[in-house]
Length: 93
Image (tube, rainbow, N blue to C red; front, side):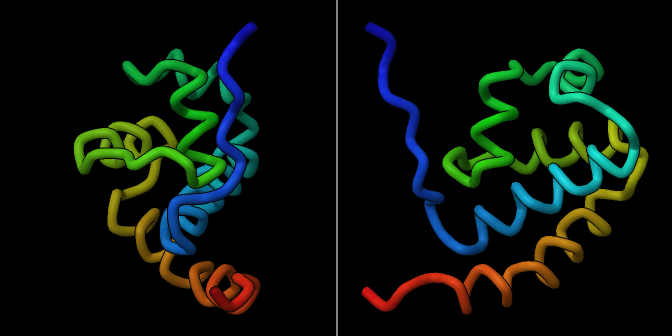
């Protein structure tokens, strides 16, 4: 039996970064597979980044941004803008 996939994001910030990657990927008309092929990132890892359950390194963020045709800072800025939505949606602990 395969391991169970983690569904809860590590943090609102991880969820926001994943959403920024996903939204940018979709806007560019790329599938997860196409984006993974354009970078040395495995498709399952990419899925984890988009769900906010993976903790991508700076190098991975740069590679994803370049493959998406945006500056890494633009991707992080977009995540920052989305983070407020994820913080507001997170139930109190």
